[in-house]
Length: 334
Image 1 (tube, rainbow, N blue to C red):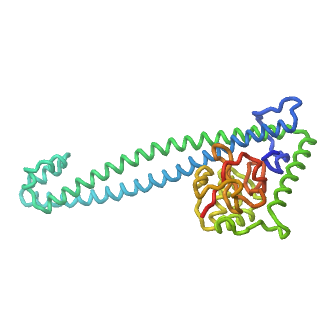
Image 2 (image 1 turned 90 degrees about the horizontal axis):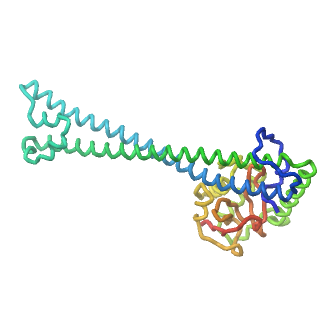
């Protein structure tokens, strides 16, 4: 049983440079197996991409906040220095600059402040101002160091995002190239097989009314999220997408739970820790279902041994049997 959806056979997008080649005489099952492997690898890379992209956005916000704080701090420091400068100007007009102010206006006021024997040469107000300047300068230096560190990390993360994006595109292109080489007869067979599997899963997930089984055994958040996900049946898979019109796997689950008022982490690996783990036999409608040993795929349990999920770039949001992919555990949110 394949995982790449009822539309996989409709390989209408031509790939000019095909990096994968079907071996002569390769059976449809063998092609399916190879395509599934490529989609699994692309799915794993997509979860890594999503995590790196999320970190990139967080770092960008931190850098901007540090830069804003540094700019404000520099303005405050300039104002403090200007206040001391005005004292020096007044003293100069009155016949000379106090030695303490001369020391401060030098390049190393910190050294001046460290000389306790010199502090008695300035007024209490002047000493307080000088200490404020010293503290402000130290704070600015620290903020600049932090901003520099964040910028360096941001550059590394952006490189990782680019690498993962390239890897995903390569895997998807290889899978599409294989699908493009199927004969018309093989495509028709595959399409019929996938359509039958999807129909079976949809029937199992629904009762006579056509609604999913929401029996109250799971969480209310999960049931609301399941209803939201069902409203997106047939929406296209786009890696990195979080809705409302296209989704990757964790994009669908995070969007669906957001409609229920719950904020989930962006990646399936992080979503795996977003609630209480349950076994397959304990699954209730609305539970997250985590797949593969590296936890790179996630769906929502829809009842009667089925899930709803966004599978890959050659398919759409659909129902699927809960045991078709390597099940790891369920997660009950709320």
